[in-house]
Figure 1 (cartoon, helix red, strand yellow):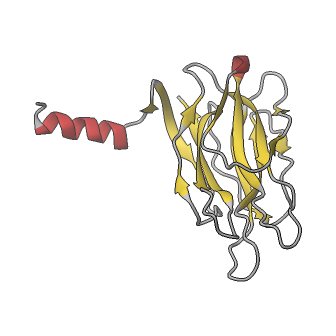
Figure 2 (cartoon, one colour):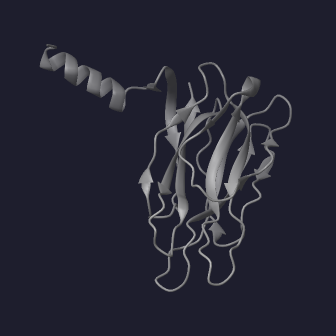
Length: 190
C-alpha cells in the first residue's frame, strides 16, 4: 500500500503539473470554447500516437430531416494525425463522414471555433452544428456542417499543435429531440 504522501504527489502531478497524460500520450493543456451546448456527457478522450500531431479533420453530419424529423446535425469529429493515423472520441449514430480537410503541407491544427445552436424549449434542438480549425500557417478550414446557430470565439491556440480530442455527446434517448455532439475539447501536444 502506498503512503498517503505519494498518492497526494501523484494526484498533484496529474492535476496541476505542467504535462499530463492520457494513456501513453502526454499533453500540455486543454483548449475549449465558451459556447458549447449543455446536453450530454463527456465521452472518453482519444489521442494521436506519441510524436504525431493533427494535420486535418472530418466531421460526421446528419442532413436536415425536414418536418416532423429530428435533426441532430454534427454527430462526430475525427482528427487525422500525421502519418495516416485517425482518432475520434464518441460519435453519434446518425449521418455520414465528410471527406477530410487538410492544413497546407508542413502545417498543423492549432485552434478551433464551434458553431452551436442555442437550446430552445420550443422546436428541435441540434447542439453543435459545425467546427472550424485554424492551421499553424494561419489558414482556416471550415467543416461541411449545417448552418444553424452561430460560431463562437476562437479557442486559445496550441503552440505545438492539437494531438487529441474529447466530445460531449448526448446519446440516443428514444425521444423526439436528440442532439448528438454538443461540445468538444482538444488537447495540445507536448
